[in-house]
Amino acid sequence: MYYRDARAAVVVYDITNSESFATAQKWVRELKQRGSSDVLIALTGNKIDLAEQRAVPREDALSWSNENGCLFFEASAKTGENIQDLFKMIAERLPVQEAPVTSRSFPVIPPPSQQKSDSGGCC
Image (cartoon, rainbow, N blue to C red):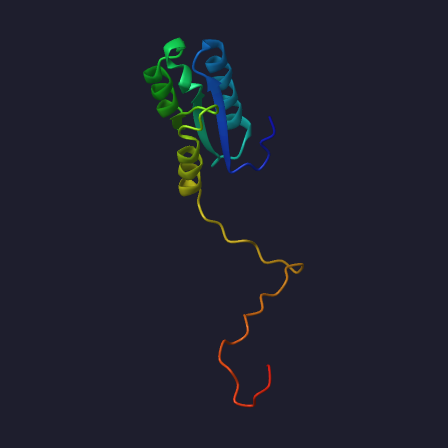
């Protein structure tokens, strides 16, 4: 996993596989220990289209997620259920940061006026 300077992370586990949930918990701990102090983590249970094969109770995952300061989602990569909601929530929760101005930055030139000149010229 690459997480250097990450502002957000989506840690995914398979709801039909309790071992994948244990691995996801390890990744969350790793992010909290070595990642940015303000990284936004979304713990996400995948394969909700296979709910009848569930091995990780939703309540257990939600409780662990809350205790560890993570957003919690359940989704299906196969059907797309809750995928847009997941990324929308992440986008809404990320703090807005101004881009740093450096000597290499390009100046912003305002767009030309929309008013026509009386001189009849094009500019």
